[in-house]
Image 1 (cartoon, helix red, strand yellow):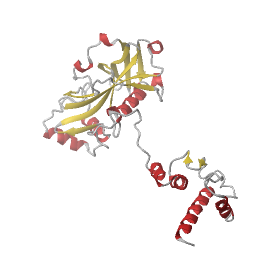
Image 2 (image 1 turned 135 degrees about the vertical axis):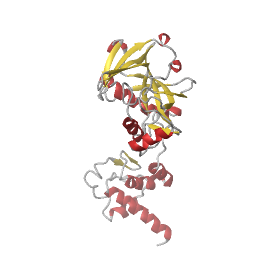
Image 3 (image 1 turned 60 degrees about the horizontal axis):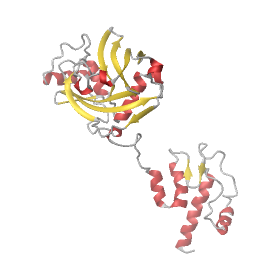
Image 4 (image 1 turned 45 degrees about the vertical axis):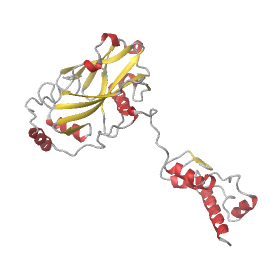
Length: 314
């Protein structure tokens, strides 16, 4: 038998193997009657596939409803029917943005992929070397050095040049002509109250895009109203800038300058309307914090960028 014949027969053997592991027992129309007879003589196509196929997968020639550890078996069908180019598309599918693309659907370059391995002693030494006075930390609304360590280890902030750098998404939730604002936040642990007067804002976690952080913030802070799987419809920015940088001091960590990388998004959330919640309502995040919300007309509120950073963000 010549080389071409051996290669053709090897391809048909792959075809028969596909039938055994759970592909549809009906061969593609591209097989000739002679080819079918040759394979049937080896007891492959004449026998039903293994019960349920592999892991109960539902497979057809050239397609599979399943992805996972058995992708290599799916590839057998693709190679036989569509050639090597389809195999490449199956093994390395194109990455598609979750929300339609653009800057808000991409992870910021400066955001860490994971948290830094720093302990409390290292953080305190870092702050001392940069002249940060921590004498007020742990009193009133101020948090402790241990809280900063947790934030850094979670990847929510980075310490650079004596500054705390965080990425924040500002979520403007609308209902007609009204926008939702967090009026204040109640800390149950010590009974303190933080005045907010701003839209929902959420710090990025590692590997999160602005829109993913926004979706998580809605889910966590408004779960009492919208549930654990909120229906969020993000709106286009209509050419306006979606990001800006500002520096200021946070009430959470006095005397530690913070550089904020802000990203702004607008959206509507299913079930989150004034006729459902009323003009004022409260939600429990479940982490010892209550959020007090208020619907306002944008014209009755000062511009977001003009609101001082002091005490406005964590």
